[in-house]
Length: 149
Image (cartoon, rainbow, N blue to C red; front, side, top):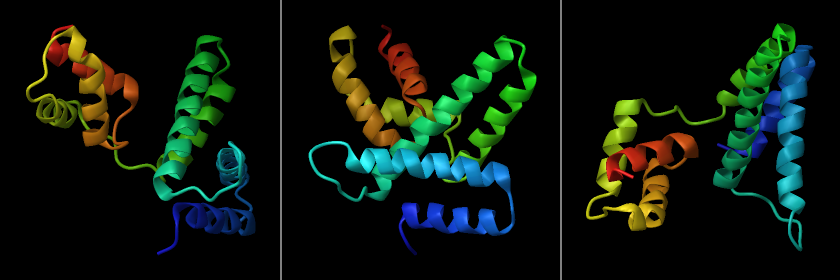
């Protein structure tokens, strides 16, 4: 199996052939974001799958936030388009953890840590354990809840 970037490119070509405009435009934007990340820094480099996944996660989060902003502004058509783009990007992201699963993983990651001073170490440990299967905001909220901060 190829890399995640290869899968995105293959799916883009398939969408172009089937004239699926929404998928085509969404994947083009996602690949452009990956390309931007590849040239960030001093030299161009190919991103590893976990780095591409991080870019896609950011793009999906942007779509959710935009959809909410459009919905709040009464622009239902734009909100629906953003949600549809987010659903396309979600195909490439790992399945998100339920609240109970997240609580269990965070509890294991926080073994031996307590208090507000441990928040940084707790977040690092929890993010590593969750490995992209939940957004940072959800992880932080659960860590705060379990630490009593």
